[in-house]
Amino acid sequence: MRFWRITALLIICGIALPAVGESRTAQTSASKPARTEQNDIPTSIAESVSGPLQFTEGSLLGLAEAMPEDKYSFVPTAASLMMCAASASN
Image (cartoon, rainbow, N blue to C red; front, side, top):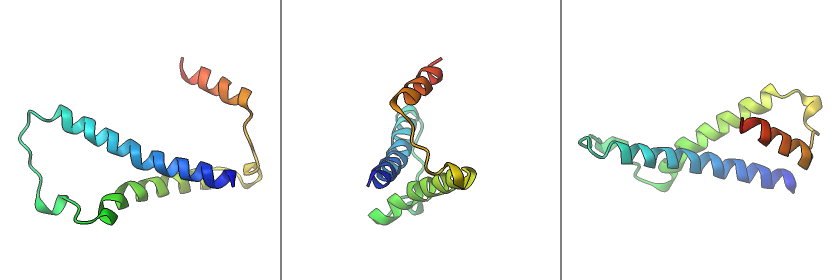
């Protein structure tokens, strides 16, 4: 159950973060004339979600392939997460 929660969270973040980056890019380039072609605009929800989903899938598969199989059972403790967050903030 915990695995599926983490997987769902990673997928949601993988979809949301590119969307946030695209919205910031659109705001900064608002002064430039829009040059979107008709083919660039997704025609369905499936098309609009497929790009970020494929990116997330590739990222997660790359992480899974890079991790040794004997480490799959690793579960971080709260202390190790705090240490990791503290070292990342420097």
